[in-house]
Length: 254
Image (cartoon, rainbow, N blue to C red; front, side, top):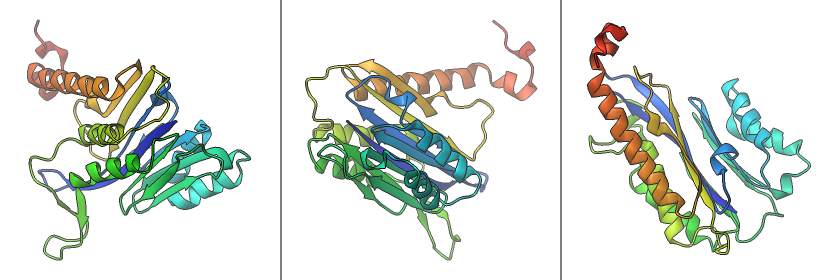
């Protein structure tokens, strides 16, 4: 009843510092998917779906944050879960990926596992949904490189690279265009995109944690929410830049 994508990107800021960011985007033909499926921190990203068990996402992220590799963490949780045959669970950490689809998930179901991201879905119109989601993300992904001139982990990206949240919404849109969730009789849908990174900001961007909990047009509404959040963020930075610099509300004015 859901499809989602989990990604890892390594990048450099203008001052030359290296960072990682992780993200999950997910949509389904039920309300409130953003409250159940995506789990993200500066250490990894996990999506739990099909017959949802939120403990798999929550505890999986805790294990990864404690230093356990993503595959070992999620395999251990699934081994202890009697409902594992009905689950889908996938994610990424700083070094690896993991993807699992239980044999009792509802057709069409499956997953894709790439070097820096995973995609999974169930109750879909077909495999093309996942392929389109993956292809759309991969076309604009920030890729790691081992170029000796710049060192391992340097970034191949240009100044026009869009924020990860926006690119993840675009990946969902691509999958949705291929058919997405097959249950067309269900009108109420939802979508979410969540991103976390090791980079700190004076004002945390609001467009990195977005949900549309109940709508008939989840992807369009999530994209509109992103655009509004981005506009609001830019306006706040412009209006209150003196506040940030002075670390005082006395500079806020009217």
